[in-house]
Image (cartoon, rainbow, N blue to C red; front, side, top):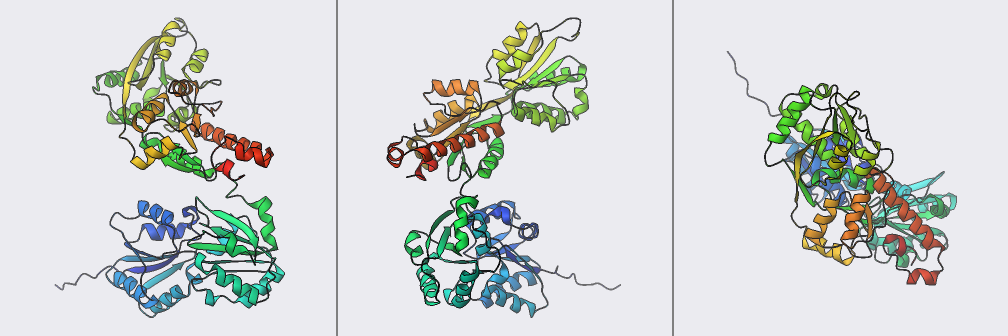
Length: 528
């Protein structure tokens, strides 16, 4: 009998283009390579926001380190990892082959037997120009350079005569770029746009001309993109990233940790910078007996209706179902009512369509207005299950009883106050560091004020419904935004509409009035 020595698994190397910076612009192949990697070496031009997003999805034991040294040194690090059976990635901004140093690394790896691949990415210059609203049609030149001396200024001058071009350089090299363009014969008055933090949350573009863009970009740091040519004028109508309704707004999201993500994603789509501050922690009831009896009653046909007032209530009931090996089939014959689209969506996620969702006001009063009184002939079972938070108001239960129903008002979960946020967030809340705050329940109002203090008077206050508005008013807050329907999407949409209206009002004001306006936030500052 012969034995064989176990071979080490073959490692591999990937040179991955991160694109212009926005994590959403990673290709699917790039995302797969990064999340499967054991070791990631990254260039300094890769934005921290993208690295943070990748780390969150990477292997738990994946190693991240900055690329240091000459191309040969980086290649040695990658080859060493691969020869140890690891998957190694060199993550670069833009496209891998847009960097001369990376090309040399690929050439060094290609001389070995190690398997490698090159995953392309959208170039920084081209991608950022699109985010800045500057088209590059027809004859064009784009370049991502780390050394300005590598730029072919004669080619750029020719491109400026025929159309437009974009180049990505370090902010400290802008003066050298200007001098190179002028020396190559580019007209001093040709339009230029300079964009910093391209595709990021704080992207900012300033427009000027070839002879003045260095002064116009004073204060820019890191990598910037210049777009040069007549197409820069198209920004007036085609700038979309920086013109989103909530662009640059810092928005406070006081929700439970589990629920904040969906709201933050919607806010980002409108250009806002959300800051999640958990104010409530959701915990099981102190004694499970009530919920145990309620679940048994559902299975035994004890209830005609279940009324869900929140996503947490839906989750609590389904967790109990799961504990007992039950599923949606055990809701057969029981009708379901929901307050709010988000709660209804949570029910639908389990394959059940609610029978009742208020068409008018999304509140306890709105539901009661449409809830039929109990009829002994039509409703042989006259009991309603109401699984709720331990601090819920009595309005709904009392209204159902008035309509002739028996109500089992059951504590499905407890809401407890979360720990206070860091000192810098508390200071920002009280000093007006946030442009808006979104409240989704009365408890988020109470708990935010309790753990962090009252939002500043200049902060826009948006509430999800009338009860939340009442609580905000009780705490001395001015309610600026309230959607017609009580749901997270409608709340974010209402805030975005408010920002648009604000911008239009400010645009219509004479300059002197704008300066004296009490309106605060990014929308106002853009006009000052």
